[in-house]
Amino acid sequence: MTLKQPQLTRRNMLRGMGVSLALPWMESLSSASSLTRLSSQPDAPPLRMGFVFVPNGVHLQDWTPKTEGFGFELPYILEPLQAVKDDLLVLSGLTHDKGRANGDGAGDHARSASVFLTGAQPRKTAGSNIRSGISVDQAAAQAVGRATKFASIELGCERGRGAGNCDSGYSCAYSSNIAWAGESTPVGKETNPRAVFERLFGGDSPAQVEKGYARRQAMKKSVLDFITEDTRRLQKQLGGNDQQKLEEYLNGVREIERRLESNDKIAASNGEFEYNGPDGEPKDYREHLRLMADMMVLAFQSDTTRIATYMFANAGSNRNYRNIEVPDGHHDLSHHGGNAEKLAKIRKINRFHVEQLAYLLGRLKSIREGESTLLDNSMIVYGSGLSDGNRHNNENLPVLMAGSGRGSITTGRHLRFPEETPMCNLFMSMLDRMGAPVDFIGDSTGKLHGLEV
Image (cartoon, rainbow, N blue to C red; front, side):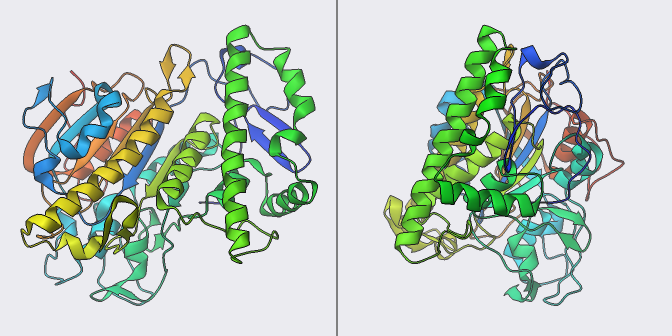
């Protein structure tokens, strides 16, 4: 998560001792308010952009819909998305050419992560002279990030390394990061949901975050206990619908905090950390994935940031999935060689990942913003930098987009583009919608046409 504090604009805050709680978009606050604020909220909800990465490709036969356009049926892997099907675009045919070796030999997994949002060929090195390209999220953050507390947030569920050889001569920095602020500057991700929560709501500086967390632990209080007075003042200014929205928002924050507290106690009982800092990470992978999804939703809902990246796992991850009765390592299984038993396990892993995406999208869709939803006002891209983990190929990547980009995208369709269409063309179109147009990104050749009807 980037910690640089840009100038805040269009903010509504509830403040208390060591607590700074940003508020969701509400119609009642579109005009001036006596609360702590720097300017009024815009009349319309902001547009958000998020990217979710999964490693090792997918089993395409159970991923790709059989028909194109409207009315397609979700295949086995995508079935968990039925409730948000009308909010989706399944995008077939997109390619990351710079994820290929192009003369650099082995290292497809490392390249698949570094190229995922950059479209740039990474320099093959395990040393400090890494080089990739600016990623689409950071291009957007540079243009619009000053409007929010954080220009962007970077989330994940596997810790990474910034140095060393992680894949056939490629630095671990390539395998562990999808966000790049510049050619040689990967943006490290946060894997601890408690740490993200504290940064979102625990204060305006790292020192305040640390002190606020310690104070609440000592007093056994929630962040909401410190903003009671401001909350009461705010409620008097809100209409009936927004009072309900505020109550739902605060209840949601408290429920997430309860889950974090439960995880903290489990970690402490295992001797993993003492209550002197938010150092524990959930041992349950499903809960870890969902807590990090909740952090993204809270960050978008509170307009703490409008840009997020989320790595379910690092490139080449060999995590096992005993929780779904797949004890084998994911990377090992991805080299299936056509073995039916291995393919069945890969399908289960792919579907499990999509179930967590469905949770994220369902949370976004459940939050109303005037006549629309938070999902309507977002563009969420989900996919992998490899197509088939066995072939290590980079054409016809498995890519989904969710959300209508504030009505600028016609969802509910399966679109098939000519193979070798750069995935970076999708990024160009997204940046235009974010009000952050660029001349090019990675190997883009223009904008991706057909996102709207």
